[in-house]
Image (cartoon, rainbow over all chains, first blue to last red; front, side):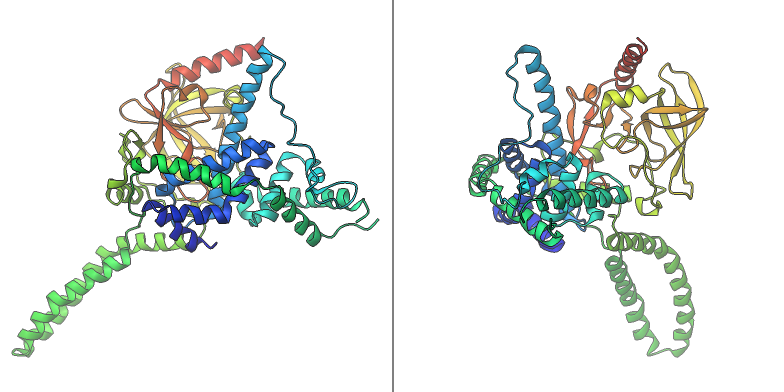
Length: 183
Length: 319
């Protein structure tokens, strides 16, 4: 979706037309989910962020700065929401740990499922779990969200050089881990 | 062993993301049902539009031409002498109009340049006007709007695109305790002067008082943050001090801004201040503003609250 097409959908939302939101959801729903998942590492939380995100978008469409880069805007909001939830979750975890041992687990996501693409001795999912948090985010933004390095740097508030360096490091790790098997 | 190539890796990753995505239809159903509940309360508004200086200038010129040229043509047809006199008069008027339009043209150029570049046009007066007029009907009851706050008059002397690129220093993620621990002095300061250092940073001359109300006189703070502070405005600033030189304790966020009636504008990273605060509708100041949807407003005595916490943290650190 181009910036112009996105702006047309935003105008629809501003007019109270749900179709505008639906079309943005169809285009970017999975991207928002993946952004949230890379930070929260929980399917349920990422789903919650995805639905909250689009409800928020419905409410804040009036504040969209026309002429801006929409993908960067969407990812930044989704990221902020995920970080807020992560912060809240770690506070809850502290309280739970103080009261009981049955806190919720902060372990990375869910166990490997059969639907994952096995390409060797590591699936894509396992190989992704070997990356650090920021590497995972960068890989996801670059490959799945198809963002430019400049937009990624802006969304993560990191220097451009750091982002490209981390990306290439991550790709090397992924290639090694996945390729070591019988691909 | 043969390594997987990057193209194949990308394909695999996209396939992995697609296959591990949740049921998007059911999430949409959830969103839609919540929207239906809220739809009656939804306040619609017109899209944000910017004032088109060029169009306005063209319309003014056309009107002026009609007013001047039509009577002149009618009179001149009967009196050729009058035409030459009027020509010199209109030339003088053209000069005056050029000077008068220069300001508008300059504004237009800034807006056009901003549209071409990465940054949105951010002259504050423009933002406030478009927000109060075009979106007046779109206001949501119970929300505080930045443009309504009692803020000192300020004409931005610098815009983000005028700043050369410079890396901000310090942490990238805001954590209140960490920022306060790094703080050497908390000041209540009014921005007296703003200028570009020429090496990618902005220099602020501040008239400052410290947390104990001691007058610090004028101090210089140099910063690379794109979240510019504005002339004449008052801020509460946690600062670091090194051999008499001051810098912002946390650069990558908007600083706490004071209003004339004792309120304070801040982002939600300042957890000690958020209780009882209100969500602030704050227009995004360019595409690099990542905090505009996290801004809060409160009448809390931010200076006292933060000073108390800062002292506590410093004491604990000393222990």
